[in-house]
Length: 116
Image (cartoon, rainbow, N blue to C red; front, side, top):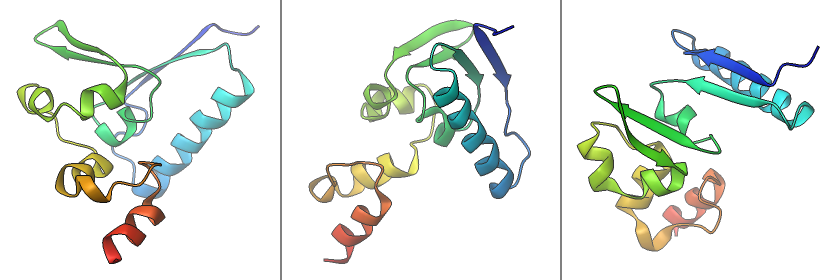
């Protein structure tokens, strides 16, 4: 039996950083092993949400945003209106837009750019 959907509700809530990493790595492994599987992850953690293929934000029971995480998190006005925080790399992008590396999530490239 191969399910079509895997539903994860706050799968990393209350875990320490190592536990969160292990769960995140497991989810990425499942995505690679079962490419046709839909993974629906419910989370309040923007650092997790930014890794999704698509993101949906609910506000007062209604869909306030549906689209690519990059589209959401580059719109700081929208993020603030939804009372969300920016993921770390988008905080860097907002503070240092001219230093942004081509690979936004490459923290080594950010470190190199910031140390110049």
